[in-house]
Each structure stands twice: as C-alpha cells, then as structure tokens.
Amino acid sequence: MSSTSPRVDARIGIVVTDSYSAEDPDHDTPLLLRALRERGVDAESVVWHRGDDPAAYDLLVIRSPWDYPERAPEFAAWLDRAERATRVLNPPSVVRWNLDKSYLRDLEAEGIRTVPTVYATTVTQAREDLAARGHDRVVVKPTVSAGARDTGLYDASDPAALALAERIIAAGGVAMIQPEIAELTAGAERALYLFDGHFSHAIAKGALLAHGGGLIGGVYVEHPEPVETSDVERAFAGDVLAAVARITGAGLPLYARVDTVASEEHGLVVLEAELIEPALNLHVAPDATAIVADAIIAAATTS
Image: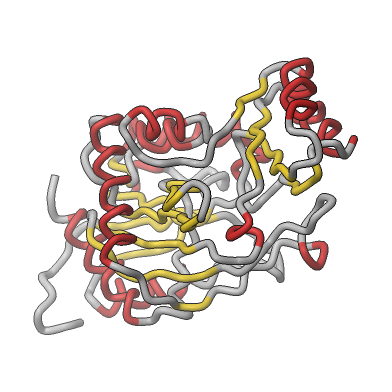
C-alpha cells in the first residue's frame, strides 16, 4: 500500500463479462485490480450477468461488459437492479443516455461539432438518403452497437449499403448514415481519455473498416499506439464532457473516452463519447493506471 494513499474501507467491484475474444482481450482489468489492491482496496472483478448481489459492493465501476449489445434487455435490467442496490459509476442515467448514439444529436445541440448524420428509421428514408449521395462513400451503422458491429464503409450506390441499413431497421434499430471522413478511413482517429474531467492519455487506434463492407482483416482488431495531443484537442474533449454534464445533469463522468478526428471538410469533430465501457488501453499507457485507480478511490471515498 502506498504511504500516501488513504485507507479505503469500501468494497469495489470492477464490472466485466466472462469471455473476451483473442483479438479483443480485456487488458485493463488485471492492471487496474492490481493497482487498487496495492493501495489497500478490497477490489474484485464482477461478471455483470453472473447473478452476484450488487448490494455486496459499496461501489460498482462499469469497465468491460462488452457483450451487453447482444443482451441489451438483460443489461438494462441489471443496471436497474444495481442502481437500486448500490452506487454505480458511471451513473446509470449517463449510461442509459450513452447507450444510443443518437446522443450525438444532443451534443450537436450544445454546440459540439459532430459528423453530419442522417438517422434513418425507415427503409424508405435510408434508400432516399443513399440515392441522393450518388457514388460518394458512406458509413452505415446502428445507433446501438459496440466494437464496430454491423458497421460498414460503402459507396452509397452499393446495394450492400442499403442492405445493411435495411437489416438494422428490420431488427428494430435506427441506421446512421454518415459521409466518409477521409482522415478517419486513413486511421487518423484519436481517442482521448479523461478521468474526473482531467486528460490522462490518448491513443491512435488505426483504421478499422474495409471499403465494401466489413473490417480490415475480417475481425475487429485495434492497434493502439500512444499519441501526443494538442491543446486544441484536449480543450475540445473537455468541451464535450462539459456538454455531457449539462445534458445529463449528472456532473462530469468518472471516466470517458472521446473519439475525435481532425478533418479538412468538417474540422475537429467528435465521433463518439464513450461513457459506458471504453477500453482504457492501460497496457500501452502504463502511467495512466495509477490515475485511474486514484480516481476510483477518490470516488469511493466521496458521496
């Protein structure tokens, strides 16, 4: 235990799931648990759907329940149950707001620059929007997903683009249709991490989508590398979280990943503000582990 760390009596659960793919493992939880325990904290991983009693923990920190999109009703029920039993971070109200990417419209209304998006709720709407774009490239994806599931980069005239939108809508979802951002296709996306509103580190993920649909290499594989960020980028990420706080009324989130890209056509835009279960990539930014652990401890010792 660090000599400068206060004794923490709270029992903390780090919320995970029970299986991860070889291509997308959970690198963060072992590092985070070790750092918490070294600070004298009673911390353990909690599989969200295993049936553990949330009331057994003074604080649950949602970290990597990456199978929740396939079990959305079950996850919503777990979130309700956990909220009634104990304190959960990020707050369930923020998580619910963040589950559907239509939250980007709320951010845009708060003056945050986003990628221009059509939210198609009918096949006719999707067909008309794609037809109007001619042969321009587009990205089609659902408003509720994670890990680039059901996400594709196509020529707007490619029948596969409409087929994906149809499949999303038929499943009861909303299809997002966005123009291709050339810089994003080239792998220029940056993920900025903030804890208690303070910038910690940033990574570049590399390009993910293959033109014509699917993922580069056929599977979801990020290639995270630490990157430097400018004052402008960090300030923009801070503006995004300030907007989140205004919209949700829940204050600044404990943790956030703000995905951005600087584009020639649209300027610096937010692609996603991930407030549910972002991979923190602590294995490539080891100095951030202590920052995350200390932020959790601070949250556990304040009400």
